[in-house]
Amino acid sequence: MTKQEITTMTTNQITEKLLTVRLSISSYLGRSRANGAEQEVEAAHAAASGSVSVRVSYLPKKYAAPIQRTTSMIRAAFYENTLPWEDGGLRVVPADKYFKLKDEVDTIVNKFWETAVRDILDNYDEVKEDARVRLGSLYDPQRMPTKYELEDRYAVSIQTGTITSVDDARVVGLGDQDMTILKAEMDERYSTQIEGAVNSVLCEMSDLAIDITQRLSKDPKGVKYKSLLDRLSRLIKSVPSLNITDDIRLSKSSELLHAAAEGITAKDLRDDPKARTVLVKAAEKVIK
Image (cartoon, rainbow, N blue to C red; front, side):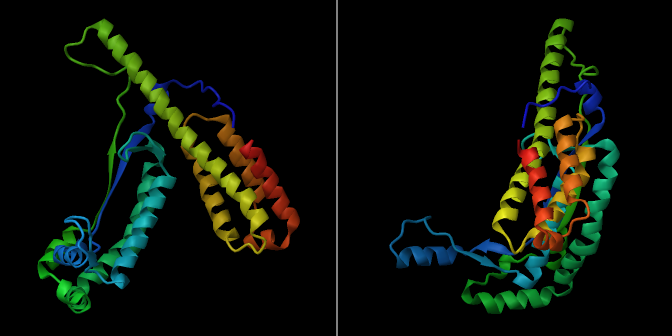
């Protein structure tokens, strides 16, 4: 893909429409180290102290798996609707799309997360007994929280913030000349972050286009065509809100793939060589 089209918007005009967001998920999956067992294994095999790690699971798979699946769903919804901003998980979302993001996450939490957590809490005596029997001498009751402690370990939240405007930046103790330098540095940093954010969507679009060309040529039975089309649909829907600089390349790529895939089903791709050809050609244009 060619270099990003230069936007006519200033960094302030872009950042003032963004919210910073950070996703926080805490959960208890019952994983713990079995220190005594580690020492026994090291002694049995003449291994150096600290070279062996033995982990056990206090939470049965039937309870842990729903939490893990729901966690993945929440993260997917969050990342599909946001853009990278800083290291450490801080991302941005257009302010007018924040409540759409929140609603999507809340829907998953209410429908799946809370059900999975309640299932664990309601059956916690069974969970503890299962762990005792299943782990045998590796079981340590001190490793398991009480039911009340456990409830506090499950939480999902989105922290929000705003981005300081370059024009509004004020620092007590700095003169006008120093503030001018500071504001120029802020503006340059914001420009780099904005470009990186949009480029992340472009890279995802390009990666998807590559997957389309490879999958349609190497997977004649279409085993994963549906997941590929679902992924394409989600990305195309997210582009209008994530294209915060109105990047022409991103808009055109999305339009090309949308036109080629509109109305096409996984069955169409399996049965109709022409449908595959149309989508592949569109994907190849995106890659170029």
